[in-house]
Image (cartoon, rainbow, N blue to C red):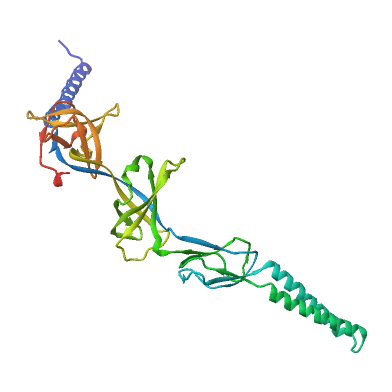
Length: 348
């Protein structure tokens, strides 16, 4: 029997492709066998005291501070203090030359100048000269009266403290009640802060908190609540309070920012796990995996409580000393056989 050459070639090619295809499909089977048992790390659930904190920011301000304003429209004739300068109560801190006084004096001075000019043009020993001389004497008397009766206005400092802001300078035009200086009592510095009303129970007067100032990031300070304001802001729903810094000798300035750490919840003998061990399900619930004595990773739906640092409290769904998967849990399914390796450094 004769076999066509083309037919023989086709048979050989088909056989070769079939063998190659079988080898390609067989290779993953070996790979699956190698990787079918996931490796995980576990830690036992632990009981401990847990405290949940919130961190808020506040600003240092002087509780006793005043804006010193001009008593009238006019020109700042003198200003006796600058920023960072201490001033005392009842001292004259500025002098204002009122606009009315300036206008009257300018009017009388101009009248004197005009009469003097006319007098120079008039001939001596004439009736006009004698009349202008009398007018000049009267104008000078009016000018002297205006300068004497319409005085500059002194500005009295109402309290002792430090000038923290200078709003104007000598020679400047100011209007009545316009700010000239701000003086603050530096012994009354406090941190002004506010917190959502749901944390109202955490900010009782007298409580002490940890405080860190942006200006001194390496110093952890202690602050005590000196005042809780007796109202809730109807717009922001926050409660305002003051904190006085204790036993701190470095310089404090109004406007400095502070971070305050406030404990808001405590759980004694809380059963907790590393926070990253807890996963979120599609229905927004929480679950984790526990390895049983048969080395099966069992899925546990859990209810969480407070979080503190890197750990989270488990209120329901977990027992003490259960071996919780803390590494490799993202790749697990319920009741999957696993291999435990090593203990995470530092307990993760």
